[in-house]
Image 1 (cartoon, rainbow, N blue to C red):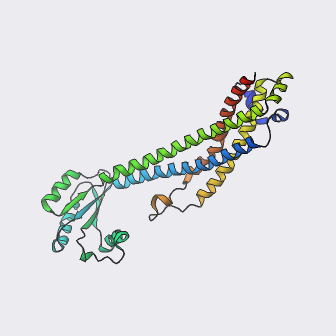
Image 2: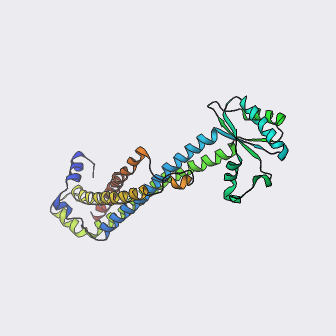
Image 3: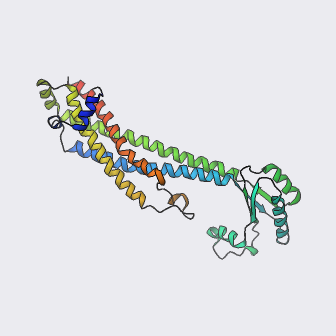
Length: 301
């Protein structure tokens, strides 16, 4: 069957007599509706996961690339002096937009998940942390380490390079897995609809032979199956997509506490992307049913 303008018009308009060839209900209809709806539901969440992973990779790459930390590991009686010395060096370091020492309350909040809220910093050899925010030019990490080693022996610079690369790579791979999942979902839909179309064609073999005897062409017969299965997949995917979008809408919004796990929803124009899933499911059903009809009708000749 060739995809022509006339066949597309017939696909959209339909033919009541031709539609009678395809069983309106039964196993194949239920399988097509359920498979397309369930896969569309999963595709929406795979899409949300992929987009969220992309946002996470961009945020981690941007934030960690423009920040650094200096740890002042020194005895208590020298810690304040070395902290002030490190801050003076940072004030004259090219590429540093802002530098400040974290307060005891801020460091205690950082350690609270592991040691509890009652941690007394003066009883533990906890290093003083200095937060460094870089400008667009960035800092010369090697040069800054040399200056700190010469003037502040207890200072250790961490430019977050060893943390940034694996985190960004993990987020990018998670985004890739999301897109791969969407492709696999489309392939699964195609396989299920192909099986359903084969079953429907085989079940109506006698009807197809009678139609041929009265002059019906294979294109006419195939178009009836293609239209019915395409519309079933389209409607099932539409229902699954709507349910999934409602579920995503009620997911917790992104927050600093929840991080990635609370940022799985769509944002802005990305809400349009799930609406492409039903037409995609219809296109997959069209191609799968067309291939199955061509193969089965050829076997029945």
